[in-house]
Length: 204
Ligand SMILES: Cc1ncc(COP(=O)(O)O)c(C=O)c1O
Image 1 (cartoon, rainbow, N blue to C red):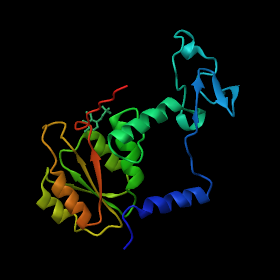
Image 2: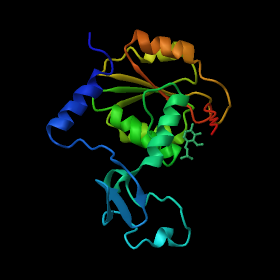
Image 3: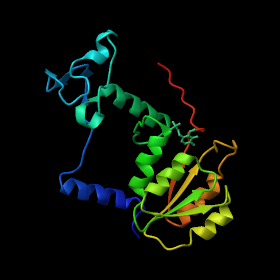
Image 4: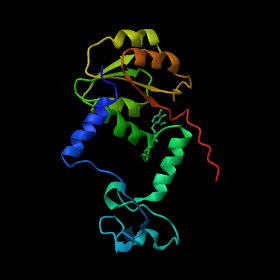
């Protein structure tokens, strides 16, 4: 049987074969300038090519536009590495808000033919993210493993269980032990929004 994450590698390979793969290029973004192959160039694909954004605040480091388009200031990569280490993960990707993190991840993973099992008390941003995916959505009773077990029997190409870690409205904990067991048994991918469970402690 295929591993449940094989589709990610396969999809990335397809994107690469069509020359559509985009990756971040670490750089030092300095107002209107960018360092490229050790040369200081005017960055005409930023939103700050006149340098007005940083002129009043000396030494302020600014990412003046899209990280993919205008060069990725390496301070972001340093932060992402720290976040990944903190969560014992291979890598991390920063989004500006929790809403955008859900919108930028759930519909990318869950496609037509897939099934999303979503806790009924999930945050509105998760609900929106599920809705804009092409997957079928099945809402299970709050934190109810038995109800989840029933709903996950439906046929689908891939299955995703989406839950919060600590629920934003009630403050209760998802039963992650049982939910991850159900995910494993059904070859489903568990997507966890841990906005209220994450504690960040960085020491410099
Ligand atoms: C669990 C959860 N996910 C996502 C969000 C959305 O986060 P943001 O307000 O940063 O868009 C919230 C907001 O409270 C939340 O509680």
